[in-house]
Length: 303
Image (cartoon, rainbow, N blue to C red; front, side, top):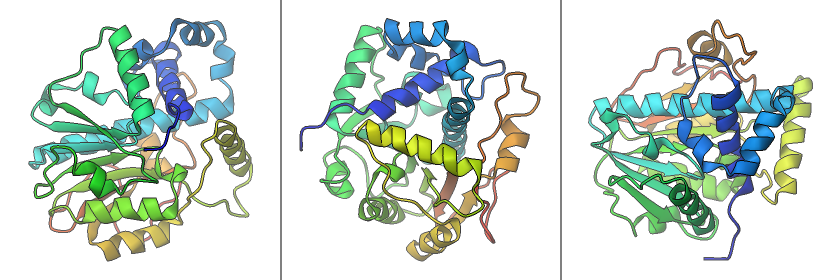
């Protein structure tokens, strides 16, 4: 596995979740006290001493997207557990904290955090420093998505390929080549019926993107400056076609309007559902799931 540094964009995501806990109003879109404990004292001091920075439109919009996608994925995971899925694979786990604050319903799941080794080592050091134990139902799987086939990497773990699994893939695909992205979809599609993937994706800019395009360019430039450039984007219609061809059904795109209605009503902190940044759920054909406010079939909603 090539030498790589711990992901700085992944740590930035943890900081955004921490800002949500420390500065945003109630109720939280995502209750995540563990994210605060993963940051060092200097980072926390910066957040507390300069709240105006966190209130800038670009940062606020990105924070809304980060907490929304985790909330949505965790609700879909709970639905999958209710229909009998007992394996959850978190691809590009970064500093994701679900395993360390898991509710009672998740204790029967086998959880897998998949990321490159450098980020995992950084995370484990931060967990140890914060006195946060590794839960018994969690397994770390070190994979570099661009150099190791995902199936090959997962075969080194205890993941059972003959049993349904839930896959969470948040904030990862945009950093991968299209080949690596397609490989993820193909792998999930090969799991038994009822398996599911929830993922985020970036859409290409259009002539009508307006200010959204400027925000996206700024975010892309930030990621590029950190050495983690954006690579892959998807048109929602083509994405739905490709997922169906692979054998997925119940393909759901969470629209901004639905997200506003379900998660962002009556807030006093100015947070609102992000206008761009796709969130999709797809189930391997054979079982159909549902989610309040999600969109299934027809023309996918683009955020």
